[in-house]
Length: 487
Image (cartoon, rainbow, N blue to C red):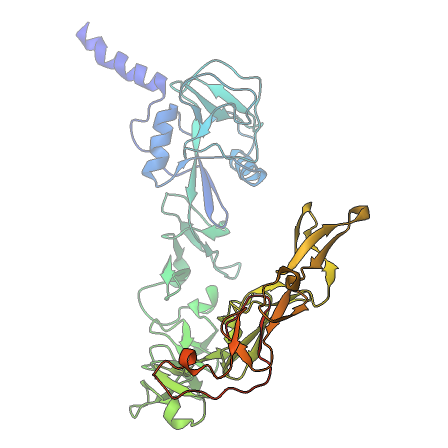
């Protein structure tokens, strides 16, 4: 009984389609600019097929577009059998409303512009997807073997197929094991062999730009008939040997095939300009070439260009900065006096005047004598229309010395108050719109805003701090408008 155990286990393993060793070369490969797709006709369960692709640096194929579908059709070539795609439902049940039915690609996402399901959703997961020669997607048990699998390899760039005459046979080998001579693009790490020329070239990064190109370790051109000898520009046979040449303004690089600028590796600190078979260095604006002919030193623009600034000049590294004196500001490259009104707080209108500013008021207002920046209502007649808030008709204002008067039709006026009727003045009184003025009789002078005293009363006038004043005998007066001021 023990003798039969090992053969039975081997048969069981074969029946499950498990890969006992890594698959060999792919049966077919299609490469686009950044992607390669390979088919392996070797029975395997989904997990084993996925692991086989990953060992080669890729993953099971994702068919997200009609472009990928076209590559898939070329790989199948009407051969019967099922092949694993990189689409699976790890757990749960299918969701018919979604394009991928809840499945996800082995890359961990559900992004796609293309689906091609064979029939309605099947059983709950885990489930995996295989494709047949009719390109239809079919749900299957993940542990059941398919007839093979499809691998996908992605790259940032590629090398084009080498140009060669039809008689020259060139074979290619990719890093993931594909071989042939009908590739249109090859991924990095691929090898091209031309046995008739004894050449082996590799697709690898070259130059500072990190681009891919065919090359070899030994410098210089190879046979011009294959890929222009690897030359950037012209390849010619000279003295029985292929040689590369470059256009004016460039020279051969260290590999003997690429063309680089004459300034490549030049010691110029700022700018390098090709000059015939050589180069010369130049500097950015604000600098000049130093004595060594390659480094650059700052030019003091303030010293070399007098008058470059209106007022003050400050030299900076590679340039200069203009500044203005206190009270001035920079306006479009020139110093202009700072307007005094900028710092003023005029309620209505501000006017710049020499040495300062002056506030003005709108019509119907005058400057407040107590606050020169503010405006107060003013009427220079016996009556004026009241200043009312258009949103609230009951809210109206009158200048000082006036009283609000409601008239027919809702009109509101400000009527002057005749202060002279109130007997404020001891002697004479003159009424003005919004104010009044007190006058003293001849031979009298004002004591305060309203009272008068006889001129010559030295006893009351003299304080002892100065000589007694001589007062004129003309009438004295004072006014209160719109506020009383002591004279």
